[in-house]
Image (cartoon, rainbow, N blue to C red):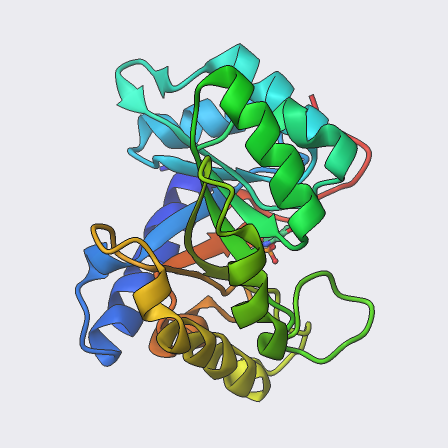
Amino acid sequence: MTDRKENLLRVKERIAESARLSDRQPDDVTLIAVSKTFPSSAITELASYGQIDFGENKVQELVSKHQLIGNEYANHPILWHFIGHLQRNKAKDIVGHCNLFHALDSSRLARALDTRLKHAGQQLDCLIQVNVSGEASKFGLEPAEVDSFQDEIAEFSHVRIRGFMTLASPSPDAERVRPQFARLRHVLEASLDRLLPDSRPILSMGMSGDFHVAIEEGATHVRVGSAVFGPRSYGMTK
Ligand SMILES: *Cc1c(COP(=O)(O)O)cnc(C)c1O
């Protein structure tokens, strides 16, 4: 077995274990393999093992990999997640290139996306990024701003709000960030009746070091990079 196949199986086992601990089924939690900085061949390798969801955090990298690979590989479906910060002037670039956008964090960005989506005759599933760590440097809305933000963007019918995403503070001890994940779950619980009634609400939280805790706190989507692909060396993308 290759390293990546082994990594993938190990991560999936831990996801299943944490799902059971939170009284859910393993299938209730979607693993997004964060492929940033890794070549397209790493994505198609994982797709051949049945991995469906992939995450990228740079617009150009998302677009070039999507153009190269498309929405399936050897009959295995591929879903693309854009998980990075998106500048308003690049909103047009992700249209048609991702299935779920995780980092909606301003009404100006929502407007720009809505305009582009309207022109393209498309809708895009989006998550509102919330800053639950209290760190000033992080992108995302404050939990207290979420409600009025949803009012502001309600008119943008091409942007479909499916749930929330957060980045917890990096910590060697995952238990320490548990309260941050709980905070995002509370944000979701408080706005359940504003989300689409016909689809399961999404909570995108948890990375390689803490996804097990995030799942125990209700994550429906975990974004896992290095635990699947191995350590990243920056500077190499294609
Ligand atoms: C890189 C990245 C991840 C994955 O990080 P790992 O620690 O490698 O699992 C998750 N979410 C976002 C937004 C990222 O940029």
